[in-house]
Image 1 (cartoon, rainbow, N blue to C red):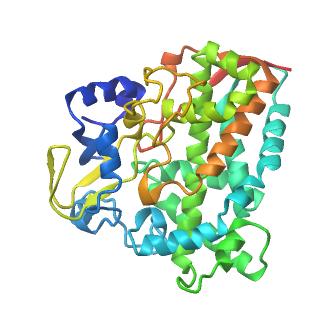
Image 2 (cartoon, rainbow, N blue to C red):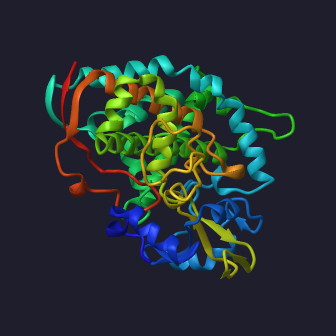
Amino acid sequence: MIINEPFKAHVYQQFAELRAVGPIHRAQFHSGITGWLVVDHDLAREALTHPALLKNAEPATEMLESAGFLSHKPGVGLGGQMLESDPPEHTRLRRLVSGAFTPRRAAGLAPRIEQVAHELIDAMPLSGELDLVDAFTAPLPMTVIAELLGIPKNHAEDFRHWTAIVLDVAHPEHGSALANLHELLHEIAEDKRKAPQDDLLSALVAVRDEADGRLSDDELSGTAALLVIAGHETTVNLLGNATLALLRHPDQLALLRSTPELMAGAVEELLRYDTSVERTTNRYAAEDLELGGALIPRGSIVAVALASVNRDIPLPDGTDPDVLDITRQGSRHLSFGHGIHHCLGAPLARLEAAIALRTLLSRMRRMELAVPAESLSWIPVGMMRGPRSLPVRYSLN
């Protein structure tokens, strides 16, 4: 199978057909890179905690270098952060970062998230057509993560542009975008070191643990880059996918609009129904192993198709996982991962989604797709899933 734009446009049908054949498949991801893709829920949980499937790419060095996906230039790449590390280094980095990225800090953003959501809607004409990605679902998370980290406003557009390119690994400017992102974050971190402020980047600069020491310069810039990307692009697509799902299910949209107390459960169901992270980042086989009946040679890439496994999870009420039901009790999903790499920013993502959707539905008296859903263009490559634009017709209260 080739994971390309035609595949991603009909991804749930494609994954259902693959699950019917088997739990794991050979796949071509991008620019000729091949590996294994897990599509089954039970096997996904096994793969995400398998002791021989590591984030360290050393076993696959030769293959990745030949394809041009490894760089030894300092400051280029997302190295030096916990998403690309294994224990004990991952344990040390996560402990240091979690010491600064606390649930309390995230929860304290609620009033500001709501304010930003209202400001974005206030800037819209009272009625008409617009692209909801450009007008709402993209600028809201960028504003939130930039303010959380303490990124100056004049750099916000640069960060939006660079993070989009970083996630498109086949983009010709991928390497330069990574370098630019690291360089600017390093400069901002140096400013925070000299004049600390009440923001996450200042906290990361200052964080220290008796057992783990502190973040090195490379770890600091790598962690900050990860937070910018993970805290922005994933939420852009979470909001886009959730809004589109509701627009395509007007009964669920009307129910949530009339019963906002369902929002917390609705967010979990929307995360399950159409995740913004279509597949996980790569893991690498540190040894020959067997997975789901397939023999995986050392150095192979293994990824998990979260969009597939979320539709394969047995639901507590025994209902059809292909049906969107915002009243579903105990909706389960792996959209934030599983095991030691479970997303540290999950509480913030849930908070942003709940506030953004509640504000949008309360302010827009009428909202409908302005184009057929089948004509929407999706992110063509990479691990993200989301519409590149979301044209809607609307009127405000």
